[in-house]
Amino acid sequence: MIALILRRLSTAIPTLFAVILLSFVLMRTAPGGPFDGERPLDPATREALTTAYGLDLPLWDQFVRYLSRLAHGDFGPSLVYRDFTVTDLIAKGLPISLTLGALALVLALAVGISAGLLAATRAGLWSDRVVGIGATLLTALPSFVTAPLLVLTFGLVLGWLPVSGWNDGAAPNLVLPVIALALPVAGAIAKLTRAGLAGVMAQDHIRTARARGLKPATVLFRHALRPALVPVASYVGPAAAGLLTGAVIIETIFALPGLGRYFVQGALNRDYPLVLGVVTLYAALIILFNLLADLAYGWLDPRARG
Amino acid sequence: MNRPLSTVAMIVVLALIAPLVLEWPHDEIDWNAVRAVPLTGSHWLGTDNVGRDLLARTLIGTRVTLSVAIAAAFVALVIGVAWGAIAGWVGGKVDEAMMRIVDALFALPFMFVVILLMVVFGRSILLVFLGIGAVEWLVMARVVRGQVIQLKQRPFIIAAEAAGAPPLAIITGHILPNVAGVAIAYLLLTVPQVVMVESFLSFLGLGVQEPLTSLGILVKEGADDMDIAPVGLLVPGGILVTLLVCLTLAGEKLRDRYSG
Image: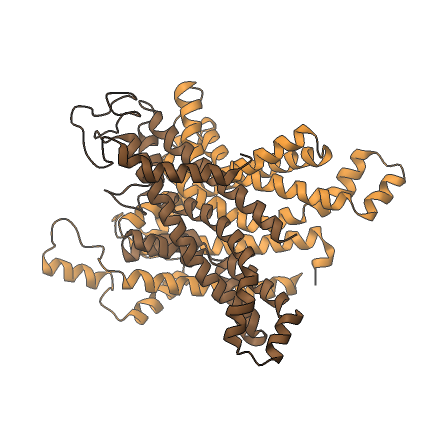
């Protein structure tokens, strides 16, 4: 297990480094700068600002400084949110994004696995077909279409739930964003679970368990489910990436002060340190989730350890 | 939904022909009908918040979204097929290195890389599709490489080699025609992916810019005004979803046929 973790880290760290380097170089070679406003700045002020933020140093020097500060957990100052450092903004936004993402992942796993189970145990019946079509639709529907539709139905027409806002994470405010975020992931998990179970149910050890006279539920939950979830486990990494990107949209639509919203604001305003910090953090999170997916894979399928 | 491609074809034909016969172009303001409800005068779907004909905007938006998607999918096709064919044909260390790069890129948060590209190089439509195409070629490269490795051991390729055909001639004359079917299936699957990315970017204001419009922008504008005019959300959203679902279904069908 430890060998596996080490081997994964040996590719993860260079990848992370490459992401930081690439985004750093891209951001610094970009035309236009953070101090280009509607009104041209006084040259002296401009120079003072450029020096204060270290933008006049050679690129490699800036990069080394950035890395060393990063190692101390300092993402630098935000150029647009003048009173905050990027670390402040991340500390404010990340918990909100993680809450959303975690709730959505749990919901997607619960709904997706149950739907997949239902479909696999009723293979060929109408409930199987409904799940199949539903899952395809859900994975094809973009969240920026489903989220406004959900708001329109439950927020505006029926008036059951708040339309937007964070409200300190009150439960009613969370319902619609979490559902909108979870739907495409739930569809993908339902498909994977159904395909995984269909494959496992045809194997010899399931036939043996049945022949020994075990109850269908015991066969399903004790013998079939665990190996069938292997593809679901390896999907957790991509799912986490999907939830992080989805959160950018969902936070914008529901006006939630999460990390994704700072990212979009930073991108629209050329706030280099903010965008760089968020991309680095996202890359680290996605790499972490891929690692977790590998570990879960090894737990579910002992043959994959080693 | 049984014939997904004919539905797509219908939408394409509508988007190409209908704007020619409409009374209002997509970017002209009708000062007498700002925020008009559907069926006001010659505005079949009404107008948006500054008085531009919604039907014309939807049709032009569909056109732009599809053009970007097709162009980006071709960029992905060219890079993916070239990368995969070279890796698969040369093999050995080169193959390993090239596929290692693909693996590393797979682990990247690619949506953020595209946004980064948009931020850095400005939000031009050309860069929207170049940027998207440049990150969507990975699956294509993997699939083509797998096919090429299988093909390499087939007798007719070995025969061509034994007959002294130069490698380039073998690749273009024998390998690529045999990879074409699978490549087209994945091209079809890449298009909805790109539609999704383009709409995502445009929705956030980072993709296609005014006065051009795209389905993503229209969905965004529709969502902003949905409490007073839900048609502005429902029509572009409906077209977008229909395109995504039909293209995905058609691509999956074709892929399943070629992968047996």
